[in-house]
Amino acid sequence: MEADTCPDCGQSWQDATAPGSEGAWTAHITRCHACATAARTVAQFESQGGDTRGLHVHVTRG
Image (spheres, rainbow, N blue to C red):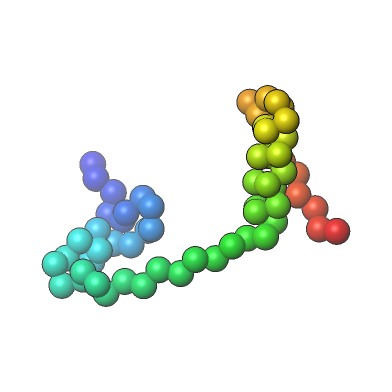
């Protein structure tokens, strides 16, 4: 059974795939600074030879 919504954006398949909907969407980019910090930390860890398998990152403010 096919889902009623796109698994990536969550929009209704009926609306998102309708020919008249082409060009009707606007995308916005938002950066989570906490996630960006975590990603940079993991990249640095990995570039120094760290094994990222099973790695979990806990981000705190400050």
